[in-house]
Length: 327
View 1 (tube, rainbow, N blue to C red):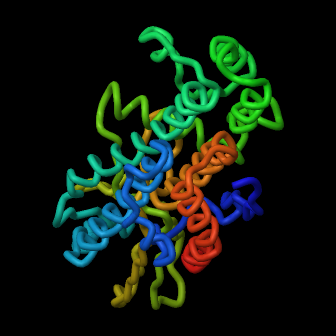
View 2: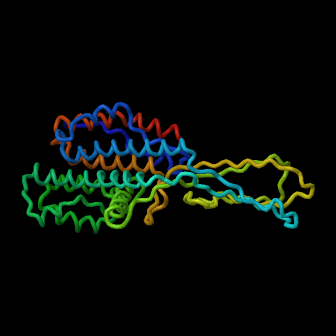
View 3: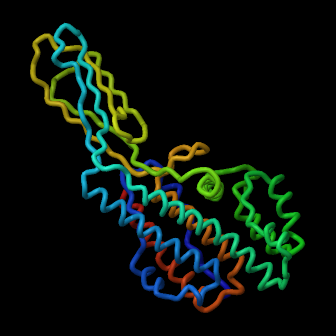
């Protein structure tokens, strides 16, 4: 396998704040999952396994959505006629907790993505470049993901003795600081992968849950005096406020029809990052990892590796079409 015409990989211009997003595994990709992982280079086997896990996560979330997992309850002071202000607040009521299996599957997805990079690097060092590392050396063969050129130079100096200059350049091109010298949106998904992986491995499960994207408030009154509307962008835990409305109480005490509208989606919550839309983030991270693995191994792929890569590339437009429909 010597050359690919890789579709434009960046989906960042599709926007981060989506009301809903289906993380799709196209049919064109599903048939390759019958390929035995023993016939794949380990890094490509990890990528195949990742797609399977992503579909499991989709199915788990879809099942929960059919069970009306949450609702919105109104708390108000409408009966307190002595108060000159009407105060309304809608709060989340969790009917079905977010399934714990989702965090375990998400952790496995992150692990497989991160380890596919390490597997690709180890494969190049040992199988392609012919180095037989000692146990202590093998522990040092980890794919670097660095936010600054200084950190990268420190790490690649250790790895460079086992890699060609061209291989070092390929790895550098995938770093978060690539092109600009500073972390930037186009490459930040690798930083996110690193941080999610470190959290899942060493500290705690990765948290994914629903959060409000936007809220609208409609009414049938001709005018509401001094109307203020506050949207609360928070994780949808039980009792969390999502929308607060305040206006001066009408003197004529007319009945007013109120209609709130809420849009929400599933986010990944990590202390080092703003909330990350789950499906879009995983697709973007997968794209970055795919490109990195392909860049390192494309001259040394097995027939089965080649088949997997081609199928993924062929499905790129189908995945992007799914994303576009959600905007």
